Amino acid sequence: MVDKSSDYNLKSPVIYMASVEQLRDEKFFGTAYKAVSGERRTKADKLKFFDDKCRCIAAGLLLNYGLRMRHTDRLNTENSLGKHNRRHEEVIAVDLKEAVRDYDSSYDYKVSATEKGKPYFTDYPDIHYSVTHSKSSAACALFDKPVGIDMEGRRANSGSVAKRFFSDHENIWIEDGASQEERDRRFLRLWTLKEAYSKMTGEGIAACLNKIYFKPEGNSLVVDCDTVKLIPMDNLRLGIIEYETDGEQISVIYKKY
Image (tube, helix red, strand yellow):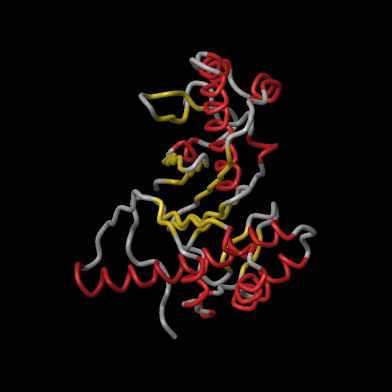
């Protein structure tokens, strides 16, 4: 049996992203559906709408693809450069037809869940993952420490949510946007970061909205240690990745160590 456990350290998560448009072709959807694991098919079967099924299958394809690429990276590292820290800074675009063609069921790791419902690989606890999708895309983050990812398309600012759950500093930052479009964008950045944090911890968004706050630092957002509530200090050792493409906001939060 090939050892697929983690034995080199990544400095940041690897993010895989794909459009779900290809899966809207029913013939290709059928092929992809047959390729993914039985567990993933069961999840898709429980969904009512076809678009939701497409996103579910896309997430399964990305997870398998990412695990396979992760293992290939590890072997390449051992064979050419030795064990060392590697840094992945870009979001990797995946062609789902390629993901289906090269699908390898040996990477369909058994999944269990914590008491709060956070999924994890039963036999590979050192491999952490998180999946997300929006209306038109799906994404998967893989790392060797806890990680959470959220992705959403542009939407109108939900002022009542911000005023109720965001910090004063966050609300001021939103309202300081030069246009409504910019204010909506700032709200979405904060919302997806909070969603990503909730996925990393497994607590869920309702429990995390007012537990962690963010503040601007240049063009980036960082954890606001002055206003953060109710989280152990260890959880403040966090890394943040923000990525925007084709109207999609992707936010990733991960433990650095």
